[in-house]
Each structure stands twice: as C-alpha cells, then as structure tokens.
Amino acid sequence: MSDATVLIVEDDATLREALCDTLELSGYGVVSAVDGKSALKVLESKPVSLVISDVQMKPMDGHQLLAHIRSRFPTVPVLMMTAFGNIEKAVTAMRNGAADYLAKPFEPALLIEKVKTCIKQTQPVDEQVIAEDIRTRELLNLAGRVARSQATVSIGGESGTGKEVFARYIHRQSLCSDGPFVAINCAAIPDNMLEAMLFGYEKGAFTGAYSAAPGKFEQAQNGTLLLDEVSEMSLPLQAKLLRVLQEREVERLGGRKVIPLNVRILATTNRNLREEVAAGRFREDLFYRLNVFPLHLAPLRERPRDILPLARFLLHRICHSQQIAEPVLSEKAEQRLMEHSWPGNVRELDNVMQRALILCDGTEITPDALCFEMDLATSPQPAPAPVAAPAKENRGRLSEDLRSMEERMIIDALREDRGSRKEVAERLGISQRTLRYKIARLREAGVAIPG
Ligand SMILES: Nc1ncnc2c1ncn2[C@@H]1O[C@H](COP(=O)(O)OP(=O)(O)OP(=O)(O)O)[C@@H](O)[C@H]1O
Image (cartoon, rainbow, N blue to C red; front, top):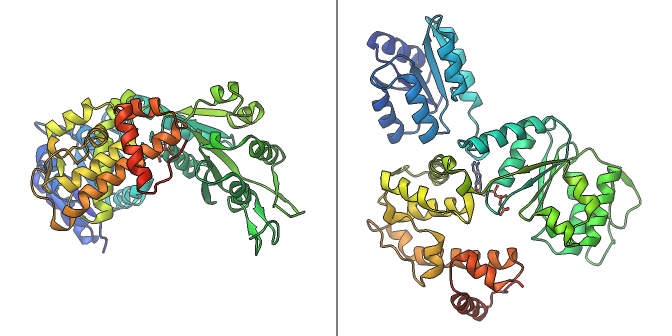
C-alpha cells in the first residue's frame, strides 16, 4: 500500500474508471476529475502526489491544465496521456514540464511502471528549485551542465536570491552527489575560529584544542564544500585558502601530516568580487581560482515570473512542515505580490508567506494578510489588522515574531552595508532618524550592533 495519491483527469468515463481501478488495485490512493477545472479544484483541496491527465479534453485541454499545474502547483509531477501516433503532442508536453507521457492504448503494467517512476522521482520538498522565469530556467540549465564538470563555481547575487539553493542543486547534479555536502558561512565565524574549522586541528594546537578535529575540507572529502559569503574572509586567511586550493591538500593546525583532497569547491558571495579585488579587500589570485565558472542570480524583481510559483511553493513548504492545511492565494493578493519590489528577494517572500499564514483565515490569503518588511520597518507595531482572528496560540506571538524579524533585518542590513547608516536606512526604506531610534532601542536591550 502506497501513501501516494494519484489524480486522474479524463473525460471518458469508461477509461477513467479503468485507470482508477488499476491504480487502486496496486495500492495507490486515487481521486478523479472529469475536466481541467475540477482537477484544479481537487489540487486546491488536497495534497496530490501525481496527476495523470488526458491531452484531448474540453474546454481546458491537457496542455492548458499542465501550464496551470506548473505555475500553481510546481511540485506536483504530471503524466500526460496522448493519442497513439501523436508524438508531437507528447514532445510539446515534455518540453512544457510534463514528467512523462503514455501513448494510448497502453497496458496496465506500463501505467503502473510509469506511475512508480514519476512518484519516485518527485524530489523532497527541501530539494526543489523553482525556476519558472526564463532567466532562472536558463541559469538552472547552466548550473546542471557545469555540475557535471569538476570546475569551481562561484555564485553571486543579492542576499536571499537563492545562491545556496543553487549550490545544493549543483552538488546533487554532480558526479560526487553520493559524497557529503558541507557548507561553512565565512561571515558568521570569527577569523581564528574559521581557520580551525576549515583546516581542522590537532590536539594542543591552541588553547582549548583538547582533542584533534577534522576541518570542513576533510569532512567534504569526495563531496562538495560550499564557502558561503567567501568575500568576508580576512586577507591572511584568503592566502591560506588559496594555498589549499592550489595544492589540493590540507594540513591541520598544529599537524604535520599532509592530507590529499578530492573536494569540489563552490563559493557564494553577495558582493561584487571584482570590486572587492579593486578595493584591495579580496586577493586577485584567489578571485581567479574561485571564478572559474561564475553564475549570477538576478534579484527577484528582475525575474517576475518566479514570484507567484515561488510564493505557492513556499506556502506549500511551510504548511507541509507544520502539517497544516494549505490556504490559496486570492487574485488580489497575487496582484499585490507582483507589485512589490522584493528588496530582500526570496527570503523576504518566505517571510511574507510565513506571516500571511499567521494572519490569514486558514483558507484564503487576501492582501490584508500580506505584511511586507517595509511596513514592519516603518511602523512601531504590526500594521495590518488580521482578516479573521488568528489562532489563539498565535496571538501573543505575532507582535513578538514581527519585532524580532525587524531586529534581524536591521542587524543584517547593518552587517551587509558594513555599518553605513545612510545606506542601511535607504535599503530598509526608513529615515536615518528612525533607524537611529531603533538602533538605540536595540542597544538598550543589550543587542550588539555591527559596524
Ligand atoms: N529557486 C528557488 N526555489 C526554491 N526555494 C528558493 C529558491 N530561491 C530561494 N529559495 C528559498 O529562499 C530562501 C533564501 O535562499 P538562499 O539561502 O539560497 O539565498 P542566498 O542567496 O544564499 O542568501 P544569503 O546571501 O543571505 O546567504 C531559502 O529559504 C530558500 O529555500
């Protein structure tokens, strides 16, 4: 018995019943719909693992239904059934994102085999990469191709654009995907600790090194090491990193043994590395080592066709992890999401969706439930009134969540702009005075302010 549910969309009642019976007998949960419109209703109301749809249907044909599913339910695979001999339709469907196709008539055994494969191939929710906009699709395609080489890849782009998502994707598509994926955030760790964490250390190498420990390079052996925010590394440490990358071997701190490395290196940065080199903050030779294959993720506002599929995906991911029913986005809410400029990119969209889930009535997200970060930064209290009362246990948490989100945004922005108050205020869309006031409140509360 499988816990997967298959949705069958077929207007021919006899065939529909035969398909349902075959799948039910094989242990699948089955729901059916007579046309595209009712299929979308089913998808809105319950989680579905796979859709099997006829191509020739009216008024919405299978291709149109596929387009709706790709944009509104991007995580659900679609298996298309085409008339025998109509291979062009099958090719078009595959190009438009169908997982596979079946040419009618087909044997029940073939149906079961294809269903099994499609469901097995469905990626876990945390491995999915949404790429609906042509710019993102092209980049993903490029990432897939470069993944199979051993080239060092640097991934640039504003904060929250999905650089780590792409790095993980490259690892999964690479020849070392069976090996470990190890990430280290170079910005979050003080320099002397970062060195020990990267290269490892022997017992007694420094005060507090009570036992030997392998570094991230060793941990990533035969896999991938992601150097997140690599531009934040100090110049002396950059020199040490360069040596390891050149020699392809590492020595632990306080150790003598040379450990040969077989590690694929990926690096991300939200700064312009060329500018960092020009300003003398980043070594030119290390820049060329890391920049063998540069990929650049555009800000979300420059790939608008990603916004709604990402919003639906993020909603699905949050609801899935919290095991709650998934509300739909109203048309007006979708419009509002499209109008926003997303300075915090996909991470901001994720935050907006998390807040919307707290504020909405549980079935539909309307514009009132969309609380953007600029609203948080400009108003001392959460601005919008909930459409309906949020669940009781969430009421007290709401203002607390919003306040800590605001604090985090201010601190992140200060860190990113290296403490420049003017740029931070501009970026957050608040006056310098308001920013000064908020920083003073944070200091009073004992929060360390960067810069
Ligand atoms: N294309 C995408 N598909 C699915 N989820 C995405 C995508 N892009 C970003 N996300 C989600 O957005 C959030 C931010 O992404 P990520 O951490 O990869 O960004 P980043 O560019 O590495 O950010 P930073 O520079 O701040 O480290 C994560 O929750 C991630 O899962």
